[in-house]
Length: 286
Image 1: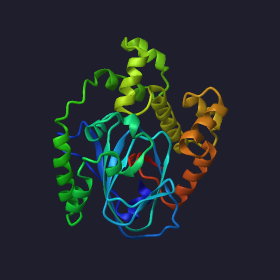
Image 2: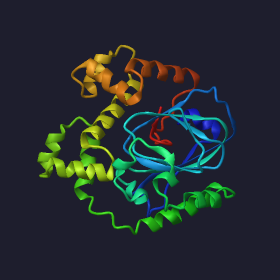
Image 3: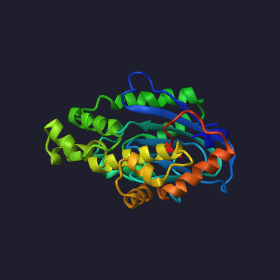
């Protein structure tokens, strides 16, 4: 997120009781943002979240959302975020599979969704929380939000052991292990695990594996040497066919690997890359 540093973007850790469920809180604040600046790429990583917006509307994939409390469901494709005018927002990013703490519904129902929370969770006091947070400083806003989230932890959401085991396996393998091997190693039926993924994560194990594989590919492109070809990078990311690599990358990110590489090179000319890999507003940034 180094491209948003000039707008006061920062990350904040959750309290110990919520650390298992929340990756981070993030804040961003600027007196004025020019609409002509380039949109930020927020890449999917399986997580979900909510955004409390105390200023002008935000644009997600060309849709302006003016609500004060917004839902970001799990996404399967890169989201383009554009900020304009006055910016003042606080967000919470749930870890993959942990958004049920907030949503208390199968996440398949909110996958690829950015919407006013009242349209998704009419009983969640999003508007009330936003109004109470607005005059407060960042630590007080986070404290108020955590009080609400801690209340939700008392919900009985069901057993997650098999699901969490499968998620860990996919993450460790960067999406390169065949899904059939996971079913066999865990001794669980394919349909049973797919139902758990649909409930907790909002997507199938195969779709989540694809996101992990694309995440690896983006890291390889960021660190590619001048003499490395796209064919070499595709093989390292687990693709045996360059055409399949290009198709799947564009399907998720919205641009080809070659275009992504050129974009990163331009970013590096403008500002040196940071050494910190952070999770952003609706996913992994840039």
